[in-house]
Length: 301
Image (cartoon, rainbow, N blue to C red; front, side, top):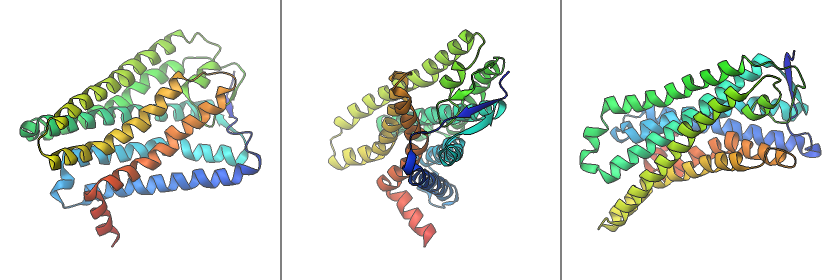
């Protein structure tokens, strides 16, 4: 029985190994510092605007970005530096669990943020009565509970599988597909459960986001005030940019081939999804949001 897996990482880096290691380390450090700064600014600010639901959701999105990056990046740095590394079976499945937690939580948070923007723009007069403290806390609790509880089902099924060789994973972290390929047990139940999760947590929530933005676009188009249109678009553009980058890489990963030449493509797309996207999220929000920029300047000065 296999007691450890070998992660191959990026075996073809050659002379670019050290520069690539420095680049990923830089992205990871900046990601953690930037997202932690946004979370600290929002939670510690005395500005009433920063206590609105939009900023509270953003603070939790920053925590989710820290989680997804910290789950993958340190191990990726270790693999890049050594060329390959061995991971105990239980350690690999643990990393797989927290990767699932961060991915599902991020999807849920992006969904509830789109619902918040829909209420703010399409139902402005009823916004405060609908998005009250109870609903706000309920949506945040929903995002984290689904994120932490659902992967328990998947990984309880994975723990029942047998791994009897080979033990080589052509990836830089333990992802679901390459781990399942190494199992010598019947994987039907796990694959059905993963497909159900992908349908309900991923696809349905993504379609919900598209639906809310169709309604938001319709409302903005029918606004009579030009300044009102610009303000409404400004409040949604940052979130829409994050949704496009995050779901875009997930969709490409899902649709791309899984064998042969596509291994390198899948690894690069996974790197974008787990390291690059959490790096750009705080940049997108700080560049597009005057309140956060002002609060950060006040904190730094």
